[in-house]
Length: 340
Image 1: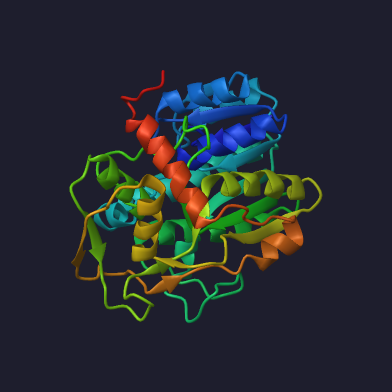
Image 2: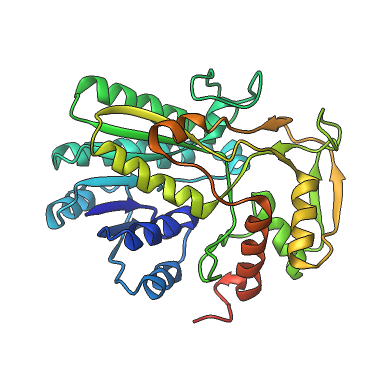
C-alpha cells in the first residue's frame, strides 16, 4: 500500500487516480487545509475503487505511528505542504513548520515503521534564477523565497538521510508549472481565495469570477516581454510519480528528476491558448514586475526520459482545453459545481 500525503490536493488527487488505475492500493492522509474531500469522492467515482483516507496532519507523530501500525504501507508519496510563493514571503515560519518540520516528523515515523521508500514533491523553484535554460538537474540550486527554500531544505535532509542509512530509496521530483485537469472535468485545480498561479486565474477571468488578469512585467527579455515558464499537464505529472516509484523498487539512494515539457510559453501565449480553447476573451492589464520573478524557466527533461522512460505527452492546447472543461463544470470549484 502507498501512503499519499496531501493526496486530496490538486496534484495529489490526480496521482491517486493514476495509482488506482494502475492497480495500486493507496491510503490518503490530508488535513484538508488546501483541499476538498470531494476530490477523493470524484476519484472513487472515476476509478470505481474506494479511496480510503485519514484526516490528519503530517506533524502529528502519534497519528503517523497509528497509520503505519494499522496499514501495510511499503512506500510514501509526499505532497503535503504549503505551496504559495507570495504567502511564504509573508509567513515564512508557517512554511518551514509545515514543509520542513512536517517532513522531518514524517521521515521519523517512516524510520520507526521501517518504511524507507519515498517520492518527494519538490519544485523548480529550487533553481532560483538560472544562469541559462533549459535547466538540468545538475544546475546550482539557489532558492529565492521561503517556499523554494523549504523544498530545498527537504531535499538536503533527504540526501543526508540516504547517506546515514543506505536502505532508503528516495526520488525527488522537481515540478515545473502543473496545469490542466483530468479530461473528465471531474477533478482539477480549486485554489482557496485568489489564485496564486497563472492558469487558474486566467480561467476564472474567462468564467466571470474575476474581472481582469494582472500580468506582472512586460519588459523581460522574452519574445513578447512577459515571463516564460514550462507548463506541464497534471496528468503527465501524475504518471511521473508512478514511474518514479517503480524505479525505486529496483534502485536505492537518491534520484532527482525534472518533470517538465522542455518548452517555454510566455504569459501572453498562455492567455492566447486559453482564449482559443474557451472561445472567450481574457481581459488583462500590465503591472510592474514582482520581486523575485525571473524572465524564463523551462526544463531539460532528458534525464527523466533516459532513466524513467517518462516524457510529457500533452501540449499547451490540451492543457488549456482540459482546464476550461474543469472550469465550466465547476465554476466555483468543488464547493458549487454542476457535478455531485
